[in-house]
Length: 144
Image (cartoon, rainbow, N blue to C red):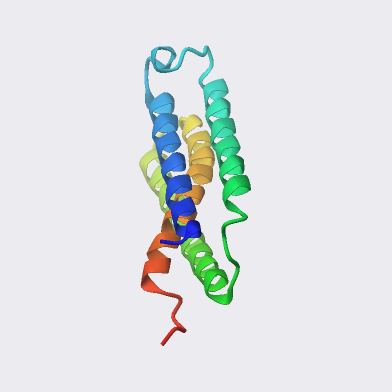
């Protein structure tokens, strides 16, 4: 297993755990018990900062061990394409489902749009990092 694959799995796992924490904090009715911060938006910013700081440390320490060749560049490109397509599908389906659920109501919980916005950051990093090992296992397509 290459360093890039290990890095992607570790980084994707960190983002996945933080997304679960983010969702628990957001949807919990008693969020001060989960995280002792008075405002859940502050808790979300703290979670995002922890994720980004851990990502920076992982990139900094594992960058020297990664070799750049045509195959790795092709795998990263395929992984980015998968991520782009998945994010477009997720955003469109979530926005359309919110439209169909709340189209007859006079009020709309605007916090759901805030959740979709921040969840998109998490999901993008999760899919980008976890699609690389899958694409790496499948191959770049020009090895034959």
